[in-house]
Length: 328
Ligand SMILES: Cc1cc2nc3c(=O)[nH]c(=O)nc-3n(C[C@H](O)[C@H](O)[C@H](O)COP(=O)(O)O)c2cc1C
Image (cartoon, rainbow, N blue to C red; front, side, top):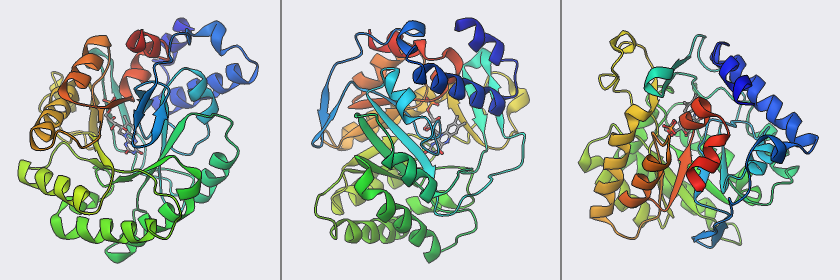
């Protein structure tokens, strides 16, 4: 299996991604996941906001944007899976090439732009999933939606996935949808959070809602975001999405590439942000994501104050064996 993952490194990134996930799905279907990957000893339950997670390691948003691979990702031993980002209407995303893998730096630059099959497709996948573990749904706005329509996009996705998800994440931090990060401002975030909070009150049960933030905002903005989360009684914060700062890369040939940078170079920035928020607030639940590629970085993220951890780039670079490496 390691050989297959090494060969896939020579394929175009999106083709490699599809082949890898399709193969996983097939291996799962014929009941051989345990034969190929070490999925034992992944049970170490952690409870947060009335949810019981099988362990503290989850799949970050973007890896399974459409919910097509929930069961096979769950079978690998992850403690939870966040699907999405999903938007109301299916969209193709930005032109290719739009993913760049920097293997030497354990990093990825992507400018996908919320390519996804639309919320109705995801709803069907959530309905038919067999995986019993925690599934969060990460929601966003279509590229062409502006102003109030953008808020309505979040609302539409929220309403459609609410009953089918264990928690919901409002993604306001993708750098690849123009002006989406403006939603970090005090005024805009209030409109978004009050709209969603009002809608949540119309449901019988209260599900956890997280806000996924950018690592590129000022300290003052982050403090205001935290206070808005508390004001509207949301559950917590996901730190962080990708950074637009490429100056931290050693390979300067990628410095002008548009998109968000993830993986090892993001580790310090996103982990510092966890420290910062823990100084302001010792209680707020934090899902830490950004640059976790080995056991040491996993442990450091927890030490910084994260309750749960997610990975994306580490999974792409190292393959599914990273799960047992981090959990054992
Ligand atoms: C190719 C790619 C696509 C992504 N798509 C999404 C997305 O749709 N929604 C989202 O909230 N984050 C998305 N992310 C960001 C990841 O969820 C994560 O926050 C970021 O990559 C940092 O974690 P990592 O260093 O473990 O990759 C994406 C990341 C990558 C590399």
